[in-house]
Length: 156
Image (cartoon, rainbow, N blue to C red; front, side, top):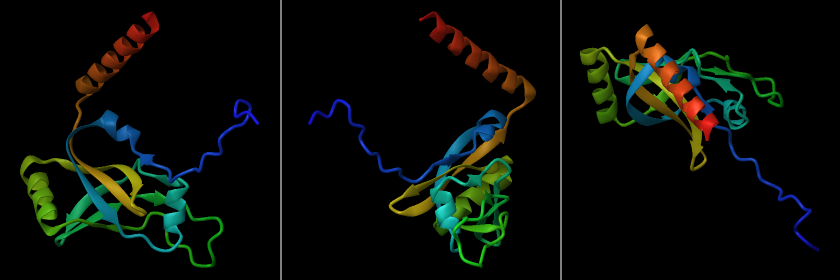
């Protein structure tokens, strides 16, 4: 048998959910990794990539880090219990990191934006960025750079 005509069966791993809109609206200054507390079938939905980070944001509330407005679609094959789609979810980080994040957001006026959700070692992780909002002229600059890169690639 030759392997020329056969396709390899790829095992589909967990999906990575990213917030592409955040890269257009914010300038990322520093990234952190946090665990996320999930309930029941939310893990399976995340594994399949059925979540939306577009409206999500993070905040430190009473020495705990929370993720708000993360939309996780209910798992289709779950039993009768289905958690709310947009409930607040606690993020897991070390105390020193949470204190550092709180200080930077209060002093410098930075926003905490979730940029990616991915699986690492079988656990769901959230990549959080300390970000500064872009002004309109910054957005025009990034569009201009993107167009120039596209033109250069086209010429090659």
